[in-house]
Image (tube, rainbow, N blue to C red; front, side, top):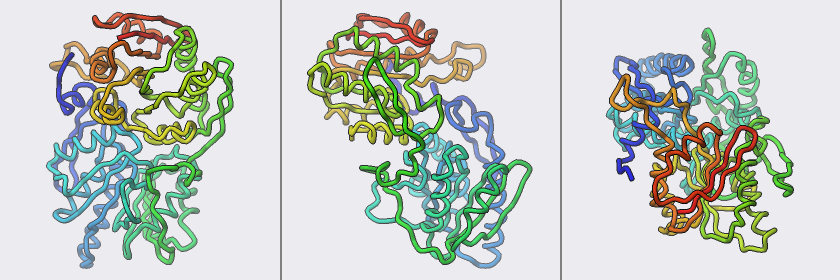
Amino acid sequence: MNKINDEDYLASYFITNSVPFKFRGISFTFDLSHGLFSSADVDAGTRFLLKVFSQLLDKDTAAGKPLPRHVLDAGCGCGIIGICAAAALGDGVSVRCQDRDELARLVTLRNAAKNRIPPASLAAFTEPLLAVSGEPSSPSWDLIFSNIPAKAGAPVLEDFVRRSAGLLNPGGRVMIVVVNTLADFFREQIAGGIELVLEERGPGHSVFVYSAANLPATEAIGAGPLFLKRYPFYIRAAAVCEIEEISVKLETVYGAPGFDRPGGAVSAAVKLLRRLSLSACSPILIHEGGQGFFPRFLIEFFRESGLPIPPLVFSGRNILALEAAKYNTGVENIVPAADLNLGREVLREASCGGQYGAVIVFPELLPQSALPKIGGKGRQKQDQLTALWDALPPLLSAGGLFLAAFGSSQAERFDRKKPSGFTRLGSLKRDGFRALAYQR
């Protein structure tokens, strides 16, 4: 097993580019990842938002207005906006960066350390938009930033405008950047008690700055139990399908056909599972199980077989998908994890410090062309398939089942890399995907 620390592993397997950037005379270097938004360079929307922020900061300073002290970067990505704000606002500022992707949280923290932003000035969390975990009461902000995710859906975006304005301290502001095709939509939302402070239109993006005006304070969304039941505007559609003669109905959060169906990887995995005569094994870890198609099938599979349903743990990068899986299955134990290696400690904690009787994974791998090379140009690329094998020994108990499902070409390469200590139990292809099962 290869033993490397998390920072080395993050750099080796996820950081695909590093770019210089200047803001208000301060030089930054930002690591980017092909797995996150804007992997080639700092995107145009972020640049435009920071330009407008810098202009407002100059105006406020000239007018003698106090600088924002409590700042939220909602949907932070690699952390560029929050980090630039922390550097510009100086000592005493507290910036909370949040993103629904656990990889974004890790890259944000890496970039903060790389640019000498102390932990006291910036923290990062895996949370949906405006959701704040671990807060006993509603927080209030002097400034909320967002390079707003356009694909979040109209109900989520409408709620963002209302809720963000209601979460401001007196005199606070929200600054968002949106693609110009959505400018009219947001202009309509910023009405009815919300004061439009400024609108700036650029070649491809618009920046809106607004404040609460006469809007009453609103409750912060708590990222915790029953999240989707309390905030159903995140639910986009209902999906009903048959998976190996078992009817499965899910509420989905994507609203896109490619994501709101089980898919070939799930189909291959469930067909192989039926062939294996799976016995009750406890507990079971399901990594990147999406919104719950496979977990729902697995629960019904155990019921159909007359077996007790073992404790289940769901992990993955996307906290919103994990919340959907929890909502659709009733399983409470969800763990944000960029991959099995980076999540190994919290995943062990989720199983009460022990190992899992079964680990079932649907890996989300970066394209091979995007992976960094070992030792620079012309050298061999890092191999996420080998890293997946390396992650198993601390998590999977002796005699435990390991099942993985992904694209057929990836699966064939993965199977060839099988280390000693694992016995292949079966293989099944379906719709361009392949599921493989092993016993440790």
